[in-house]
Image (cartoon, rainbow, N blue to C red; front, side, top):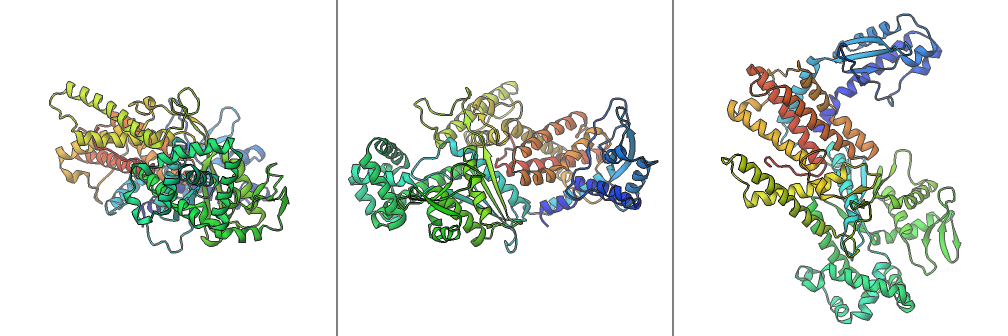
Length: 637
């Protein structure tokens, strides 16, 4: 059994809601009143319990429910709350999740709440069973079984254009897409395909090929003589940054020179339609060079992708156009798919010169993924500006009845990254910030922050050993890359966010640095206790007890149980910031627990072990969160 399966099967929140929902429906059925059937709760009512807002000087509860309200508004049933409480108590007898259920009256409208206290006995058993389960797992994360009959999910993300350097504009799609994939992979319930749909078929290739042919004939000839097995021997001249410079010059020529513009368009047609060997050779060279450069960036970010260019879908285009023929029409020589109820501009499936567009290849990609790959869910992680395009493409697929009721198409839009002034994030020269440069700057700034903090630490306690060069270099990468990733992920993806190294690398507040420090501190607590009491104390045994008598102990336990619920919410809404919020709250709740509940001096050996096991469970859940967010961790900062 996988970690996700175990946690979901034994999840407190699902169990509580199921007990209350089922008991409520049973109580309604017992009254044989057709009018009460309108109040039956289906499984889609997954949250019938809400966190209890505890009034001062009142008996504490953990949750409350308003399920009685709708009936009380329209019906008068004597002792209704008492009857429902008895029904819930009877139903949960086999597994007493609630130790106490009491009604209370709303002083404003006199309707009744149901208030619930979670059984510490049930919670103790769940935590202990979970710890025993995880101790027996060799590798909790990424335990992928055979892919046999799992539903396939294709996540389309990152997607840079080839023959150009990756820049800050590719950051959000890459980071968001990676986390979404990690969460689906963690469940082990899906066959997740990490698709990098790169632009290798567009006008930029026509411009670049034409520019090399007419303005860089020496390099053009060298490329024609190139062989793929020689790619590792490429010297400085063939860096992708040089092609970026040539592309910029080609773009200027394209904008002012009518003859060059015509040549560039001809090269696109030669590439897409005529398969001219010289055009194909230059195209292959540029693709290989781009793949090498992009893969270097992905390795730094810890992101794995399967790359497919737009050209991959070219063989499917004739079949797709045939499928769409009853919905298309000719307009000014171009083949269009009009969807006026979605957008005033149509999809252009074939230009008047015979060339294809992004509309064509994106529609072909959907067709291939639904019919050939047989994917159950397609997720596109693309910036907000692309929303009208994907609305059109998704609607076209719907019009053609390509996706059935069990197949889901999701557009995951996200805002832009700006500088601290709210303006577009660019260099002083006005160019897009290269992703490689940004990552290097993150490491440098993280190193400065770590060195300053380490120096202060050693000055305060000369007995401490300062960080070595190798340790500093590793910590700088973990914190630098983690700071960039977390700043992006914690932001609601739909909104823009301001990029600030100073805020990202702050040890205070909701930052990766703060959370990584909190995690390192937690690891230090566990190390210190095991050094004093022996390593065996951190191992959970069947006879161990986990005490939840202090409110801070129970609050921590309740939050730890939310982990799977948060993952399910992220998979449904595709909002990774919800996991960041959970992790940040967990860190703060643990800090309250550690403040209120001494571990090393708990007063008894049983209580010391109980609290240490709570620390171990927290460490495990935090580690899961970091891994799912794509962040490495440090045992010492």
